[in-house]
Amino acid sequence: MLEDLARIRASFEKELREAATLDALEHVRVAYLGRKGALASVFDTLKTLPPEERKHAGEEANQLRRDIETSLSEKRTLLELTERESALKKERLDVTRPGVRQERGHAHPLTKITREIIAIFSAMGFAVVEGPEAETEYYNFDALNIPPDHPARDMWDTFWISDPKGEDKTQNAKRKTGERLLLRTHTSPVQIRYMEAHQPPIQIIAPGRVYRYEATDASHDIQFMQIEGLMADKNISVANFKAVIQTFLSQLFETKIEMRLRPSYFPFTEPSFEVDISCTYCRGTGCSICKQSGWLELMGAGMVHPHVFKAAGWNPKTSKMIGDHFAGFAFGVGIDRLAMMKYKIPDIRLFRSGDLRFLKQF
Ligand code: DAH
Image (cartoon, rainbow, N blue to C red; front, side):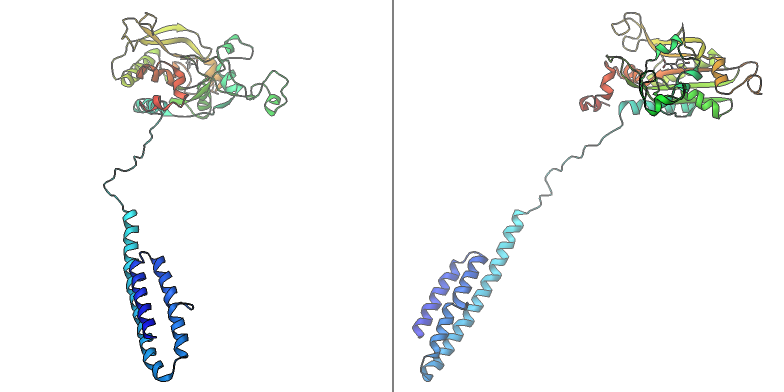
């Protein structure tokens, strides 16, 4: 019996030494202390021994069990520690590793230049107002002195919310002439909306998106941005217009800009003119962009037509303000075009291309 115990002790110690993981250690525990383990059969045999032999062997067997239990628990503590250490080693946090760079976005170039334009006009006392992009035919055309069937309507081919002349049975087609909706072709309707709701003197700019139904190329898109300007008061003249625009251009382009007015035609102004500026690419010496003329066409403008004041409800006969010497100037300028001139962008379609190589340059 005692020999059996010695053998069990020896083989236990060998297996214990060899157990390198907690799993292996558990196998050893089951093999020696388990219900069908080596010690269980020792205790079974003990029962069969004569009493004088049983006492001594029993003490030895109990001693062996205690030793095994102690050794197992010591080894378990050791293995737990090393396993935790190696797990920690694997999960090590290297605080010196470079981080993942967070890319920061920025405003779109058109948003940026619109903010610059607004800042310049605000400093000159202009209020910023807005109007709807889905506009009625009345505000986009009629109120601006462009009656239905007038050839001037051809200057602005537009997107109707639904076809006004076709077989369209939608709500919009059933609206009365003038009330039909379209995507505004210019920001000029904001002039009417503002004058209807306010009394002179007024001094506003109206930035926003406009739409044209046309083939796209490097300088035309079906959607672009405009800024409308309107100043109306006693004694407003073309001289005021020139001073305001000259100040605006010099501040936006951060250099003195030459400008000239050319006679032109718009139904809502009389007289009307086209404003040209000295070519920002060649500084007026002549290049392919300005077709060797030294000038670039910038915006339409003019003195507000009396019919436009009337359409907005400003009646010279009933209004105290609107009488002798009352006048106003208005202008409309493409923001995309200004951005193209300022940043020398060759193609208007780049603005809405979503091309990050382009956008990241601003
Ligand atoms: N609305 C015109 C256009 O989009 C631009 C324009 C011309 C606006 C003359 C004005 C103006 O206010 O007086 O072509």
